[in-house]
Every structure is written in C-alpha cells, then in structure tokens.
Picture 1 (cartoon, rainbow, N blue to C red):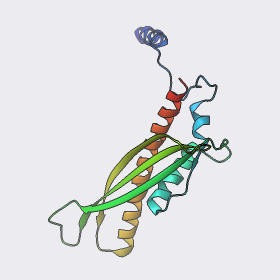
Picture 2 (cartoon, rainbow, N blue to C red; picture 1 turned 90 degrees about the vertical axis):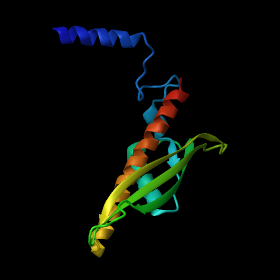
Picture 3 (cartoon, rainbow, N blue to C red; picture 1 turned 60 degrees about the horizontal axis):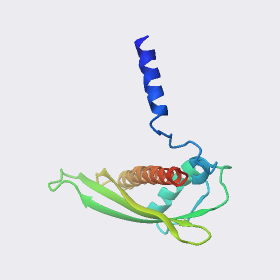
Picture 4 (cartoon, rainbow, N blue to C red; picture 1 turned 135 degrees about the horizontal axis):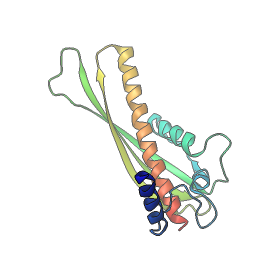
Length: 166
C-alpha cells in the first residue's frame, strides 16, 4: 500500500513540474519519432561512417517509416588506433580503437545548419597474431564503437527535435 501511495505522489508531482517525455508529440503535432524519420542520412566516405549510418538508419528510419526528407545528416568519421599495453605479453597485444564522429544536421531546403556535434567511442581488442582472428576482433571492435556513437547521435538528435517543438 505504501508503494502505491508513493507512486501516486511521484506521478502527481510530475504533472506540475513541466516534465515532458522525450518521445511525446511536440507542439507542432509531430512527434520526435516522425521528426527523426524525416532526416536523410548522407552516404559517408569511410567504412566506419557507413557502420554508424547503418545503425542510425535502423533506429531512426526503419523500413517503411521514412517521412519526407526535411533534413540532411552529414557524418564525418575518424579512426585512431593505439597500443594500450607498453610491455606486451608474448604474442599478444592490446589495441585501443577510438572512433570520433562529427555530425551536421542541415535543413534540406536551405542547407543551413540547425544542429551539430561531435562524439566518440573508445573500444579495445586483442591482437594475437592470428590473421583471421585479428581481423574479426578489429571488425567486432569497430561494430561496437559504431553502435555506441550512433546511439549517442540518435539521442542528441531526438533531444534537439523534442526541444525544437517546445
């Protein structure tokens, strides 16, 4: 019974504080989901950028949900690798991969920038000097980094779209 009362108090207090869920409909009648699906994501020029784009497409514009292209998203990615361990074990090395992506959200009609930012992800993997295993470990690290960066960009764009409608 105490939990129910506590829940009702919290629920009632939220109604007066101006709290608004991120994915609610904006004042223009369009929700954040519809706004995100109106963003065309331009083809990047690198494999890392393509992985980020693919992840964004699957989360923002799933098949059959794309709206009219009101915005264009430009992605620029950079990958840097460095050794994490100075004294490597015999035959094994730890590598850190840092994926940095800057993005610009442009209005489709005018081409003017409405939002931009930069984000990164740092992941690590082992190099054991087995060519196929090393390639797979690097590929998996790149996939993880791209998913993390895409999730951050998605959240930032959703926050922008939600704030734009207020």
